[in-house]
Structure formats: structure tokens, C-alpha cells
Image (cartoon, rainbow, N blue to C red; front, side):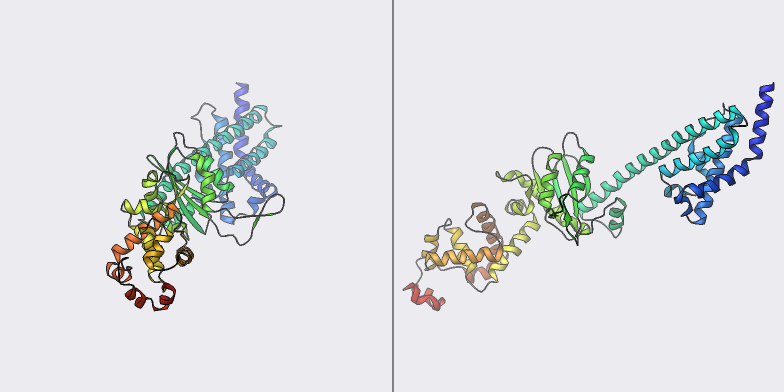
Length: 423
């Protein structure tokens, strides 16, 4: 019974000095933890309640070691929710250490059993706090994954509201500049962490979405006002989206990989996503397509598959600038493609010198950026002319060159400035 009386006396003493222990703990926190002193008064008071709750739980555990095991969540039950979000695991462990030191200093010389109990208590509550934070991190990870999937789906469908920027920001998106969408096949084992590490190495943000056999990445790149530097001090050039996609390529499965066009901001990434998805669907039709392939390089295949965006792009970027040009670039290009890219045949049909055809084709390349002498680009241009002629049949009748057997004098009257040259 002597041992029991000694424990009862120690327990009564601990209850009597619990208020003093709480005050001493608050003073010690102010002296040893800078982050505690920088907190607003309301949050410091909440931390004090947490420390007092920890001391009360220790006394209850010392009184009855066989009671239902407590958890760290019970200790923090008196704190407001905002405080639990603002204190990190490291700060929580520092708080536990200070509370344990204060109690240990008072009981170490008074009772050996109480001293051993506070050591066990400090250890157990530290492990329990780590478990609480781990569960919270796991729940946050699951929530982030669901939110990320929702954001990527909104970008792919183009159906989003004013809350999209805030949802993207909640995922840690820091880029405030251009964005692009990369679509490929999903690998058998997707390493999302490796994808994110590669993106950070390329100084880019990343949103990851998996839709069946498709892996969709929304890539963001900030506009930097100063150049990054390498380890040797030299300026590091900003990586293009194609270079970033090339770095991310090993994380995809075998097969097609298409990069959509660049858009000014991530909230406009649905345009890049539509082009990338349309290109992904038809990338197999181009036998010599690269990996990754630009969606704009697949404009003919996308147009033939019924993609309205590809048709509009071909007409707007190729046909319309040539049709509006004051020179005979459109008719020259049409004749050149219709004659199998033969300079001599084109010159004969237009009654001009082959060098004139060469000059006009060079001007075509300067105006629209595509070179008609290349086999692949000739297909793109031919498709653009066909779509343009379908969209504007009346104007094309006036621009269509005369047949080879037409009256040469009529041809001369239509181009009076070249009559002497054609004689």
C-alpha cells in the first residue's frame, strides 16, 4: 500500500502544480521558439491551450495507465482549426519537446516513476502527432488528386467557370505565363513523382490527368524577367515546350505523343488540349511523325478526320493570307501543286519564266511560313487550298488561271505588265 500512497501523493502534487506547469511552459515557448513569439495573440493563446491540454492528458495517463489509449487529436481538440493548419509537424514536435522538458524538470527529482512516465508520454505523443499529420497529408494528397483530375477534365472539355484559376492555384501552380497540353499513351506503371521532378528540373509546372489509355499533361511556363544561370554563371536559355515535352517523353507509354499549340495562360489551355487530342487521334496516319509531334504538323490529318479547328487554322493561316495578297501567289501555288511541284510545267501554264515561279514560291514561304517545295508541307498547303476553295468558291473562280489552250492575248490583257516578257 506504500507504493500506492506514494503514487497518490505524486498524482495530487501534479494536479496542484498543473497551472504552474502551464505558465512555465508558455514562458519557455516564448524564450526558445521564435515562431511562437511571432504569432498573433489569439494563436499564442490557442497554443497555450494545447500545451495545457497536453499536461492534463499526461496527468490522466499517469493516474490510469490502462485507460483507453489517447491520441494526439485529443490534445489538439481545444485548438481552433486554423491553428492546426498553420502549425507544421516540425513546430508540433518542438512544442511537445518543450512541454516534456518543463514537466520532466519538475518531476525528475520528486518521483522516479513520474519521470519515467513523462519520457514515455513524450515519446508516445510525438509518434501519435506524426501519425495524425501523416493521415492529414494522405487525405490532402487524395483531395489534391481528385481536384487535379477535375481541373484537367475541365481543361479538356473546355467547360469551366470562374473558379478554375483558384482551383489551379490550390494545386500549387506557380506559373503565370504560357501553357501547352501534351497527350500520349499511359504507361503500364505511371511514375507521377518522376514526372513532377522532371518538370521542376525544366522549371515548369505540371498538371497530370489519366483518362484510360491517354495520359494528359498540362505544362505551364512562367515568363521570367531575368535569365536563369547555370552553375558556371552562364545564362541558361528558357526551354521551349517542345524541349520540355522531349524531357517528359520517357514517362509515356509506347506510341503516339502529341503536343498542342502554346496558349497565353493555363485558363486558355482548352484550345491547346483540343488540338492535342485531335492530333493524338490521327497521329498514326503520318508514317514519319516524330515523338513528340506538334499538333500543328498534323493539320491535314486532323482536317480529314473532321476537326473544325484544323480546318479553320489551315484556311486562316495559309489560304486567307495568300488570297488577300496583291500578287499572284495563290494562283501560282495552286498551279505548282496541281502540276506535281514542277517548276517548268507551272511556268508554261502561267506563261512566265521558271525563275518567276521560284520567286513567287519564295514569297509564299515568307508570307505563310510553309515551304511548298517540301513533300510534307506541300500536302499541308494542298489541303489548305482545297478547304479555302470550298469555303470561298465564288472568289476562286475569278482567281483561277486560264487553261493552257486559252487565248494568249487574253492572258496578256489580264497581265499587261508582263506582255513584253512573254513575247
